[in-house]
Image 1 (cartoon, rainbow, N blue to C red):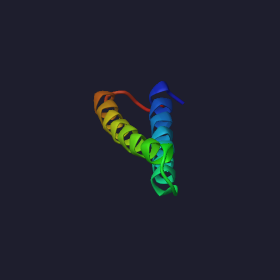
Image 2: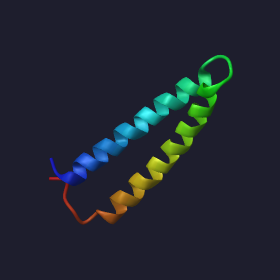
Image 3: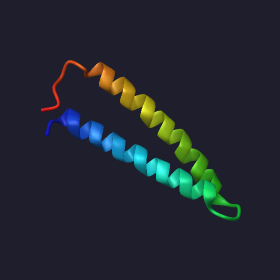
Length: 65
């Protein structure tokens, strides 16, 4: 597995994790930190998606092998 493939896989896993934290935080009952963490996770997820798209565009000439 190349470094590029590992990097893409790691970023995809981070996006999935931030999505899970966002759903958990925004659906947790009560107030306090969970809604704040959920909102932050949404922003982090959006940032990771933007980063992934830019990374793939920048590294398009390199192979995944």
